[in-house]
Length: 336
Image 1 (cartoon, rainbow, N blue to C red):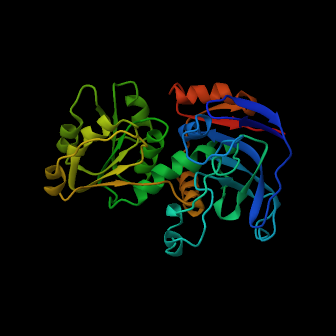
Image 2: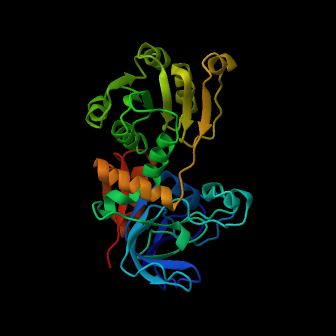
């Protein structure tokens, strides 16, 4: 089979021809149709994640059909349309798993990091990582929903915000443009926050009731003028930008962080105490959460904006993504 493989940290994606992987006990094999390119794929390309074994095939936004099952995977039928996201399996035995909190598994696997992912014609994954794909979603549309989609949808549905509450999305990029659509479909009074006005029309078309230009306005003041946010979804990986919105929280407001930025930010205790506000991080979700995301997206006609490239052009596609030149998600299409 063809695959785009990283042979060592910092190396390019190299086209290789290797044997199709065989599914082991409790595993299934996918014939890949599409695989999104995520910023987290830099962990593999640059060797930024501990314990990666090389060579490695990246990819954790994978859509395809079941091609083969291993022993114990017989509950899955060949030809079923499925996907694999960031959460690539769990141990079932650690304390979080025993409480059913599989996304926080102490020995969690990550597709494309712990094992070879979807930059290939075929891949193998544990059956607990498999999510059903609704027929209404094209493969190219479904792939980014298995990471960017589930991250924003699952975070928003786990806030205390109710329909009609003011909910803001900070950063209108690969995550934020989906977060806006989910927030609108959930019935929130939705605020888009971005720098400049170039994304104003797009944000309004995606469902934003209000737009705040972070270059021209004090974001916290603007949110307070609207009544204070019940929830702010921070999607742009800028600690300074995240810090700037904290003062915009309303009573019992929650800042929910899904943007993976390594830099710290400051917050005054008074900003939280006086409003009973809080700050919380949120990871993506399990395969079941992926299914909920995909089903809600199909129901609400929510789609990512994508650029597509053939598998062999993974290097060019990755560069578009990593330089933030793509609007908004990049997807590899796989034939064969």
